Amino acid sequence: IKKKGQAGEIPVCLWCFKIDDEYKGGQNFMKILIVGGGGREHAIAWKLAQSPKVEKLYCAPGNAGIAEVAECVNIGVMEFDKLVEFAKEHEIDMTVVAPDDPLAAGAVDAFEAAGLRAFGPRANAAILEGSKAFSKDLMKKYNIPTAAYETFSDPEKAIAYLETAKMPIVLKADGLALGKGVLICRNLEEAKEGVKTLMLDKQFGSAGDEIVIEEFMTGREVSVLSFVDGKTIKIMTSAQDHKRAKDGDQGLNTGGMGTFSPSPFYTAEVDAFCKEKIYQPTVDAMRAEGREFKGIIFFGLMLTEDGPKVLEYNARFGDPETQVVLPRMKNDLVDLFDACIDGTLDQVDLEFEDNAAVCVVLASDGYPEHYEKGFPITGLERFQSSDGYYVFHAGSKFDSEGRVVTNGGRVLGVTATGATLKEARANAYQATEWVQFDNKYMRHDIGKAIDEA
Ligand code: AMP
Ligand code: GLY
Image 1: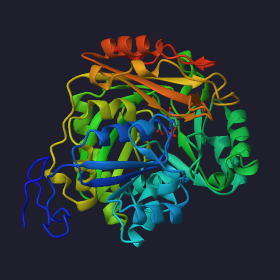
Image 2: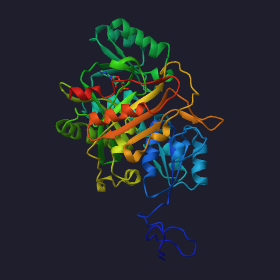
Image 3: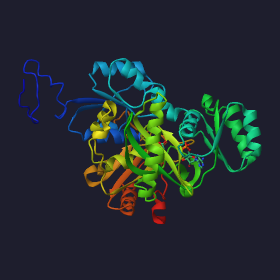
Image 4: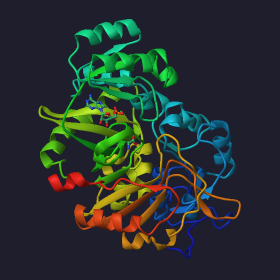
């Protein structure tokens, strides 16, 4: 039976007032749970909140910024039983699992086993990021361009190999290591030290039981995010991250200190090459291996003299790439998540604004090593996404007095759009001045590469 709803013509049952299950185009009928609590999840939550289909957003555990658009729930990202129980109790229509650890550990499998709808790869597909040895072997088997490599589980054999290898060389822990398990070694001495760090001292725990030793590549790095439904892949716009803590790419590796999108180095020619040799072949390879991939594949690419090559795969949205990609996306994110789950991505036209975005991370001084937290943050109210200014919270919380305070190494991702990359960068850096907190630290050269394009 159809009844005219106030927010448009929504078919509802006149007896129980439930929305007709077959009705997909209506207003405000979905409850979505986001798993995670950083800047990436804030960007996802902000984008989902724009959707007319969303009635209510929850985020576990969330943060003080996410709390503006979602109800934060105090459950950790690895507490699958509690998350599933929450989703059942609150009649969640879709759960979006954003971070790498729960994906690799089978969060999506846990939801599916309970008969619930979840967005993200199952554990058998999340291995694309979870094991570097797996991803390198996959690329070799299916002729996907990447750096030459060998894998080792015996430190002595690794050292024997290094003694004859060309330097510099790259050592990678096989497993997940918060993006820090990659060592670039300039000479044999550093490489031997690296084997010790990863395999003997176990700085990254069991992630270093096996290592990949890989040829060092040079060139521009580009990040490309994509939606995948198991067979079809749709590429989002390109972006570039700045991983080192200090200006001029000095200092330690971090989770990412800032991003810009699009990358001026990601030309139509590069795009065509990657579509033919990298993107679709990766999706097809996963299917052929019986590991159908549904979710986000993030391609870390190096544009070498011999053409684009894969540096790494991630099985999720990048952080802080998401903060510059989603503000430029025209589509309703709910439609994309639905299409990936249902295998109907081929019917979606993915569109981006013809503009640019820059994200500058405001961190706590001392990150990624030692830093203090708990300082009040001021100036957040000046950001209006309708004006193209966004402040995505990475590490914030409410203190006992209800003030927003710093709660992590990366605190905020100040993002601005503009007609051009230069304009977006000027806007983003201007907006970094609006926010204040003690020990505020940022890089001043995010997007400097734009000037070389
Ligand atoms: P990954 O976590 O694999 O992306 O590695 C982290 C960073 O290390 C990359 O963003 C690159 O800057 C660098 N890197 C990784 N592999 C290589 C390689 N084979 N050659 C040169 N740089 C690399
Ligand atoms: N920004 C890199 C990553 O998310 O791994």
